[in-house]
Structure formats: C-alpha cells, structure tokens
Image (cartoon, rainbow, N blue to C red):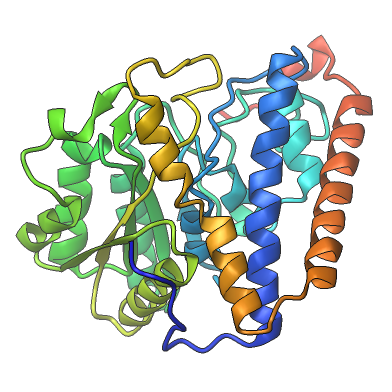
Length: 327
C-alpha cells in the first residue's frame, strides 16, 4: 500500500499527537475487551475492530458535536471519539447501571442523541436509510451538520444500502457513507459476494462520487473524509468512501475464523495502521520515544480505570426494567 503522506488538510503537531493517542486508545479498548470476554466478565457480545482503527480515527477526528454518526457493532471507538467516557463505555459492556442504557439492552445498540450517536441494529445496512433521514432533517433545518454512516462491504449487497444511497443522491443530502471493507462479511470473502473490485464504484449509479482508499492509513482516511465533509457542508451532496482494511479477529470473539489463512492474516498485520503512523510521526520529529511512552502510559491508565470502574459499578435491579418506558 502507498506510504503515508502529509495531507492538504493541515494538522498541527499537537493534532497529530492527539490522533496518535486516539489510535492507541481505540486499539487498547478493544484488546482489553477481548481479554475480558474470555475471562467471562463481559455481559455482551464483543466484536472488536482491531486492525481497523485508522478508519474510526480518520473519520471521527475533528467532527462537531452536532454532526451525527451511525456506527456499526465493530465501531466502539467512534463512541469514545464522539464524547462517551471510557468508564461509561466499559460499563456498557458490563451491563451496569452506569452505562448508556442503564443495563437494559445489548451493549451494541445504544445511542446518545446529545452527542450525535445513533444506535446500531443487528440488521447491518439498516442504518443507511436512517442516516439519510437524519441528513434530510439537517437539510430541511438549513444547518451545515453532516452524518457519517458506516457499513461493511457485505451490507452493500442489501436493499437498505440501495435505498439509503439512492435517496441521499436524489436529495443531495449531507451524508458521508463509510464502507469498512475488511474483506469478510462474517465468513464470506468479498470475491464471493461481489462481481466488482470496489464498493466505491456503486456510488456513480446513485449520482455522487465514490473513492476507494487505503483504510489502514489514518491520514488518507482523514483527508478523504475532510474533503467529503466540506462538500456535504457546502450543499454538494453525499460521498462514498471505501476503506480497504482487515479485521484481525473473527467476526466476533467466539468466531475462530477458520475460513482464512495464517498467511493472509500475517500479510495484513504487516500493514498495521499504528506502527505505520508511529514511523511517520517519528520521521517528521513529531513523536519522540519519551512522548510515545507518555501516551501509552496515559492510555493504559485510562483503560485500567475504566475496567475498575465498570467492575465495581452497581448492577441494575429488576425493578428498573419497567422504568423509563415510552408509549
């Protein structure tokens, strides 16, 4: 894959270091969850995005609070970047009262309207028409807010994908569609589900631009997203950005992923977005060994604190199940 290059959307050294922190935090959060679920401590299905962090960080970096995201089950890092505290997010995985939904639903489905987060559903791709609806609201209200809608290459073969993108194209809505193409829809390899090489090619049939990029290059993702956001805020309509990437773990933590080879996994691990970005930062003298150690210590402390908080938080009581009901 092509090397990282400095983007035309200039980032200061401080912003680059902040981006480095988020990459490390999102990775550490998922890695800790992977351990905790094996210890039987997590009360939720766990679908890690290890290996895909550049997509979340590159798309969420610099978003406004008023902008909406429609994340997937594998995008827990987007909740953190949009403002959910690590303690609260970890409580969500432990089904504690200190979580987003106070222990009422699966950890994967909660949203936070005040932070611009729309809760996911199990029907992957079903969030795309909803994202178009939110973007339509922004257009009617004459704001310049934007929706970021995530989906996988498998979801691009569903009817919801067609309906959501078609409506967005017809109405020229302020929405950016982010395809996390990690090569497998559960166990189905991309070549078994699509007769084209790039999901991005499908954007043309809906009347807007699509681009396929290296999803493991955080600056490439950031640059493509910033361009799409600028067009959306300027009334130029949607964009489809396909991020080519790979998930290191199975579809979920209980999936052993026997359907892929060790060689394939090793090849993609050699494209790990974090060491690649680390090398870039050190080559441009933005990141020193001391600063890297400082960031890594801060990340570890944050994750340790979140786990301790979640484990010690109170469980919901049966009586709470019938509160906060809406007719």
